[in-house]
Image (cartoon, rainbow, N blue to C red; front, side):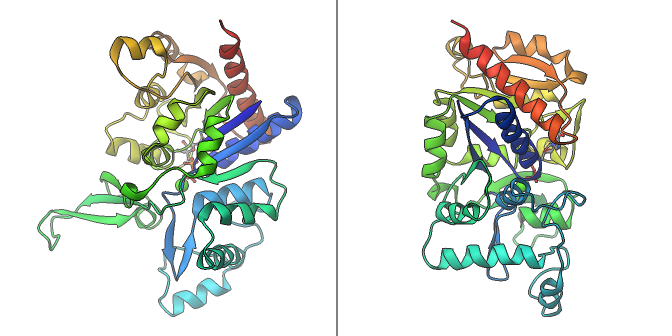
Length: 341
Ligand code: GDP
Ligand code: CA
């Protein structure tokens, strides 16, 4: 079985760790490819920083700080203190010393002419991840956030800031008017991502942020089409349980695109891929199936009639076991759908 996962950072990494564990326990021989969001990437102090890919790398290699939830375990911040003293990096963004090692290595390879995909391949060679990571795109598509600014000098009443400033500095506290992915016009999916979709038996949409993680992956020209055209059965997992984002600030992102913070609303936003619905309405969607929390079991009937096979299962990833159980539920559902005539 070839499994391909679309994922963001911390939430995505928890889920992928569960998928890897489920494969180890119950599906020997299955392979796991992960298409990781690159929209949160940015340049800082001359270094290319790729937060979601690093969350994946650190979580899957066991190098992550479990208590803090992000970054490297046993981290120190001596270099970061120096950079701040020089005013090179802002107060609100910390670069740990070990983490900086990764950023320097990445940037060095990029400077030597390697593509982001080749860099990711080299970085993961160091650890036995048990899965293959691919950046969604090799082109730089950094997410920016448009917010209201009555005093804007250009008279537009709006201001744009990099996603990282909005998310990390302002904790998504300034209402977002919309998201703007810079560089989309020259971006295409990475070869690794396309190959993983073309070859998949199952495509899992991780319970990652539907707007700035999964939404950014799908916004890369050609990506949504490649996902929808995949021979794999597509099963999504809701990041929303009982009307709330489990961890993080997905609600601020969803409200900016006019989608309710609700498991069924997110499924409808992704849309049904089912042929019946497509023929009837012309709508093109993504999902064959969707997992909601047991708290949201009521949503199942409606979604089911709209062509999205829906199951209510425990959705909280508290530890490795619960994450592996969630992955098992997603893969079981895919297998069930594939066995239907
Ligand atoms: P980020 O890139 O680091 O922000 O991480 P992701 O985009 O991959 O994932 C963030 C999303 O994961 C949040 O919006 C949460 O709703 C979701 N999430 C976090 N923990 C859990 C969990 O235990 N279960 C589920 N279903 N979703 C979760
Ligand atoms: Ca992210």
